[in-house]
Length: 66
Image (cartoon, rainbow, N blue to C red; front, side):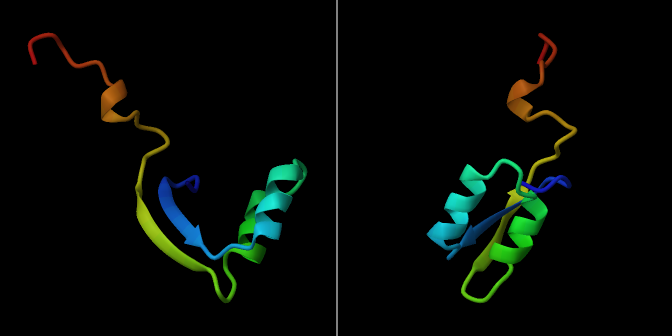
């Protein structure tokens, strides 16, 4: 999920790239995505949007009369 709330699913990312992001805490996520996910052979699909500022409906307390 990006900071604007858009959610994407990438497929075809190499195992080596996945291992590098998991094991390297100092790596920039943005640079990693640009280098490993926006290349030939990697497909991207928009899967939805979730606002990072508005809680999910399940987390909202509705009034008792509803």
